[in-house]
Length: 104
Image (spheres, one colour):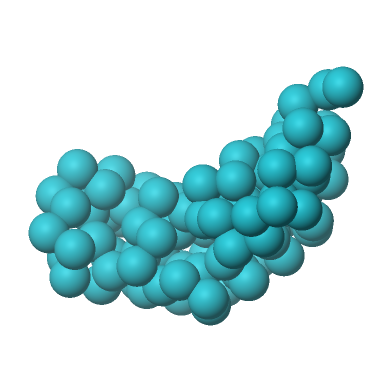
């Protein structure tokens, strides 16, 4: 059983686990299935907007698809979520990526 199959099996038992959902999105990204990754992250963040770790990955995937306006919006949402959570590390990473995007 490969990693993606294992994650899908775990999600059968724990469909709302944010870590498993995020990990599955990363696996889809590794296999070149960006749209599937994006869809998982969007659903995850709509369900759990405080799951700060997914904002960076979602926005980066959107940038890779030249969906810059959407990426900007998700970076902004991530910055707000990181600030609310007091997660300075995530806020700094999101801010640097956001600033890089806006400099383009």
